Length: 507
Image (cartoon, rainbow, N blue to C red; front, side):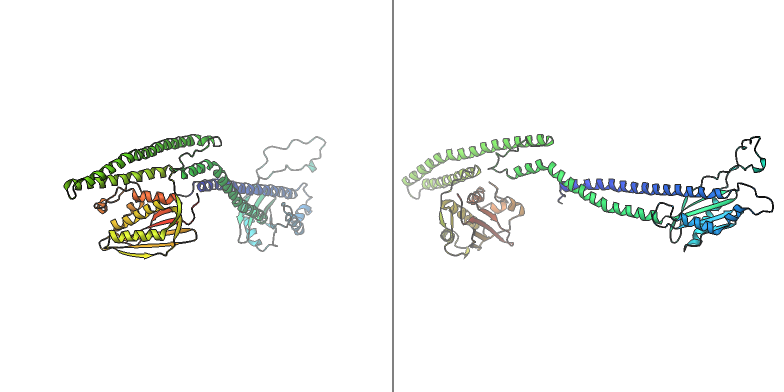
């Protein structure tokens, strides 16, 4: 399972953390703003309750038999209607706010109640219920101070009894939500309900602002985290780029430390030291294999010449001649191995020299076809290519590649099997495919078939000669020509190798 990008995870984690913070901040801010608006509304409601109540306590006792003008004013419905209308515009909004008002006397008789709202009955019921729950004002705690001696006792005013501070509650009807406050005086009771419609509209606007601004802020945080993490991971990308270029020809790559963040300096230093050790080890191994092959080439050549000369001097058909022939074959085989090792060491060092000429691949394939018919007459050979397929390359090295492919097609073929030779060219490349009947190659062998000295399952190769260098050298020769050699995917019972060569080879 492929893990998501580390850079993407950093961006998403930053967005998640910022989102949690912003959502929490937005929720707390919304509730704080809402509570502040409710508190301001309660303060205004308390102010209007206190402004209305001083009209109720009588300041002078009227003479006996004379109607009290203040009690008559309390019963004046037009005055309360005017007061209610003034309240509708007094709660901090530019529009008319629905308000309900209930006024009772000391005996719980209704002096005034609102009847202009569609839900007045339900609201008035809530106001009356709130007045029932509101306690009476406490009695005065001390006697009033004595009056001056020149004060007329007949005009003495009774002590002013302050009501208990009202408690504000929020109630809901079928049509709206109301904020209700009630207060009781000894001779009057007043309850006011203010609709929270305006507050709810303002809070809905604030909520919509949060719903729009928070996703935008999260997007900015994610983009910023993506850019910041990209800058932070730049040394990792440089390290990855150098690692991708580390081949036998790129071990001299190093990452500069001067422009790297402090956190990555130690990692890059360790990586550079590792490359240095690898380069030194590979140079030594490549030099050893090349020097060994070169040093063995001369004695093997001498040994081969001596064996050939001695073989001509012995009696034909004798046992000595047979033994010398066997020794000569082994010396030739060892010489071939040395040549392959020398070529591989040159390829590893990037020093494989090519003698470029125009090569007629059709002609080479026909020569290989004649060899197959001579070496394996029991195999059926099919061809599919035209004359005149030419490329620019080293003729001897390309012959070695084709010989290796045809040799493997013969070695690993089935009894009474077959071989197919296909070739075609495009404006840029030439493709040569050698297909043969064979046992299925296991997946583990397919992945390592081009490894040096690897011969796969011994049960398949018990009677097959070779040491496992042919395919590796053939691929190196193809890559030296700016081409490639690949093992193709085929149906069961087949094996196919495709040689790809460029039509024009730049020096």
